[in-house]
Image (cartoon, rainbow, N blue to C red):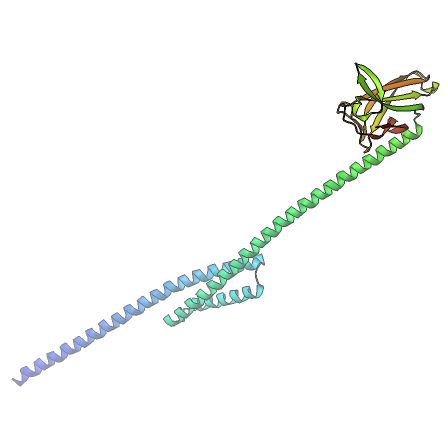
Length: 298
């Protein structure tokens, strides 16, 4: 009976030992699975960290190359990113360290975003300045072109004035013996001289050219210029003559024979358009004033 009890106890001990061994194996396997899962998790997080840090380092290097943000901040960011990459590469950290690195990564990402915003702001300002600079250059070029055109116009004007002065010095002009300006009214179809302003229909210009054999058989052009009391030029049938910027009332072509020649011409105006006062008749040849005559209307 004792022998059977001993065998039974021995079997119990063996079963207990087997259970302990199996429990140890199960605990070891569970611990191994947990460790492997943690290692795989850390490896995965490491890959993500390295990827994020590599991208961030590329951004920092790009911003540094552009030289558009604060250099000290860039150097600090580059150094800290490199430290994290080195630390992750050694894989000598725990879950707590991983969380710490993640927090640091988030801070660096926020700083990197801030640097990107600064860079975008600087790019925008540079674009605005470039547009303003281009607009200023265009305005400057317009001013230069206008100044050049003005200089050319002034040069042409000076040359023209010199030519006119030279012509005035060398050209021989007609000599007028008399110049007379009068007012004419129309009664029964006949012209009658008058001094009453309200009845005037025409202004008459009459000149007597002195004889000059050296100018014989030439076509000469005279210009009559009638001025009213307010010194305004009186138009012929609402028309005036503009010659080189000078305004005249009438253009008169004369076939000069060389002998004394009388020239008469008229300026037609609406009846009642004149007012009382002193009137002037200026007679020009080209731009030279030959003679002046005054008359009065009441």
